[in-house]
Image (cartoon, chains in turn red, orange):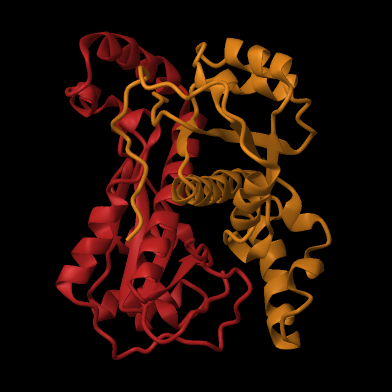
Amino acid sequence: MFQLPSNHVVPSKLLIPSHRISKDETEQLLSLALLSPTSFNIQNWRFLMVRDPELRRQIRAVAWDQAQVTDASLLIVLTADLKSWAREPARYWRNAPQPVQEFILPAIEQFYNGHEQVQRDEAMRSCGIVAMALMLAAQEMGYASCPMVGFDFDKVGKLINLPVDHVVAMFVTIGKGGQGCMG
Amino acid sequence: MFQLPSNHVVPSKLLIPSHRISKDETEQLLSLALLSPTSFNIQNWRFLMVRDPELRRQIRAVAWDQAQVTDASLLIVLTADLKSWAREPARYWRNAPQPVQEFILPAIEQFYNGHEQVQRDEAMRSCGIVAMALMLAAQEMGYASCPMVGFDFDKVGKLINLPVDHVVAMFVTIGKGGQGCMG
């Protein structure tokens, strides 16, 4: 049985800043994450891997100076496209039987169109689901991970040039040697 | 390495209606779910296990008549308390060192107080995270699972007597013999 990441950790247990995760391991993590379910298969999450050390420092400065932002092997900013449901949704179901397509495509339209709060809820739900997939995959690969919301969402959006119609949902940091973070 | 639930399934693969999950297995599932991380450890999720067959039928009627609502061994309505951050938050951190408590408690207040959208985002994020924990735990126990948003959220809220300041985030159905659902 898999073990869930602890939610009772303190920030003294820091990640090892010098550790580098391999490209293969990073791809393994992301390929697993990409299998996470999304409502109506709209795959609304967008993952930003922040690799530039200077950008990491700038993000840390608006993230309560939490060390894992710069020290983790991976800093993944989970964002979502609020309008993915409207971007040629037929392609998300092109391999489904025709009757399923005929049911699901109008259902997608009806579920999201004009419902801004539902679109935003979906962003947060999808990113929550994929965050857990990332954290459990990381754990099985021997890494520690940390879900984070302790940062200024607007400032992070500006720093990463968040496109219009997108939203930042949370961070996941992944690294070696520690297990902790605070928020 | 664990396997993620598929998001490319069609509704013809139904769960076996007659299967009953044991009390021990149900408790095992939920005890794992309760270890899922929440922001600031506010544990804002609330799980409703719907066992009454008549209530299951009523929910199915407002959930696009999806068979798994009545046929799954478990129907778990994931809801969240939008105000859990304000309900004596010191108890969530009572085992943490004093300096951590002194930092985190004002941070919780500042993060959520007066920010209704942030409170709602947190509900959806937390429920997404725990939904994935439930689905992966179910899979490791040999069960199929299905995340669902294809239902009338307001009508479901009325049917389950959703308390004030709470919100329905999604369903997770868990059962034997199938693997599928649509939305």
